[in-house]
Image 1 (spheres, chains in turn green, brown):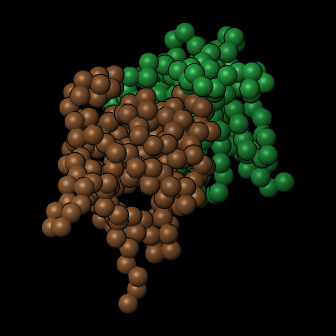
Image 2 (cartoon, rainbow over the protein chains, first blue to last red; image 1 turned 180 degrees about the vertical axis):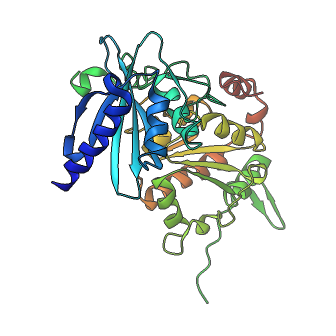
Length: 166
Length: 180
């Protein structure tokens, strides 16, 4: 498989450079995925951008795993437009203190993605030039994609649970 | 020549050279047949409204040919579509900018109750921020339903007392929404 060879080459270069910091490698549907830590994430992203031609930041988002030790995974998707390869990087951070360095130092386009991730998951991107909510109203008070909040609007009085089988 | 319909005169006393009725009824008659709607369309109900304004359904037949895209000259605020909570202050501002007398029509399930969007980011009915006169059900409502809702607004306008907008009841109603 050509794809796998390409991924293995990328992984070898990453492991050479960052060693133990590259963990949890998997390849779902041929998409190279690995985890790293927040102290090296910016170096990893810079290395991927400058040395391995992952020139395009597709997305930054997060996943909440309630009850886990490091319950918030910040997920970066990169795209190498030259060689048509994509890659996914996860950083697991603590739920109590969800901070991570900003990627706006590598890609200016990370600005709004990080604002969205902050808005929905409460991840604080340190060094971000303007970390405000971007989608929800300013006085929402919660980060609604965290799983401790109910999805439905709690103000609603006309939707009785019994009619919805819950 | 096409047949032209003229609205019936309100009940009153008629005689040779004079016609007497109450001022409320005359004003109501004039207003109800010349309402200027302000379409506040945010989603699919707005598409149905476009059909309603088109030549086939033709809201103009009811005296609403002239849409007002400025709230200052509008009589009826027609809210069509999902209103996100972030949009709520904007909607309220538009309502406040309208001059009295003003009416509000919530078109479709989303504007009336939040519809299928039972979620943290969507306003569960515009009546959480502004008073509503007529609710039009449907998801989205057909143009016939929007026309029917518009005629219910016309009924309200026709029968409204000239002093309603100055009454304590009305001030209290607006006060509930924190307006004025």
